[in-house]
Image 1 (cartoon, helix red, strand yellow):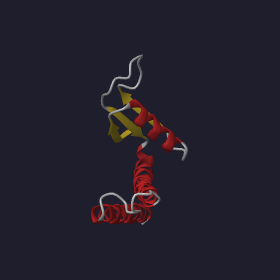
Image 2 (tube, helix red, strand yellow):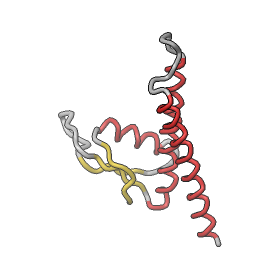
Image 3 (tube, helix red, strand yellow):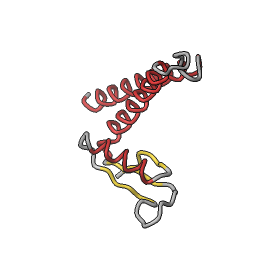
Image 4 (cartoon, one colour):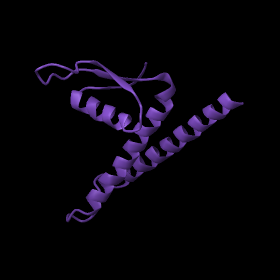
Length: 116
């Protein structure tokens, strides 16, 4: 198993595990996951080495998608209809989209290099 990401809350870790599991990616949690008290601390999410590129791509795609959902919710708000952050929020979306595109290109190139 290889390290994918670290989070600070068991709930967040379990949401990530559920998301990855829905696409057939087997995960393992290490850290302060279990216990009778809601203690915060670093929790590490691990995946199989072969699943690492796909898992990274899924998490990045989810992050990009959440940016657009936040913008849609802000546009639907009765307070002016403008998303919070103005130009900065728009720039963040573009950066996220460019990042997603780069990840897809890198994963594709890595796959081609393995085949060639």
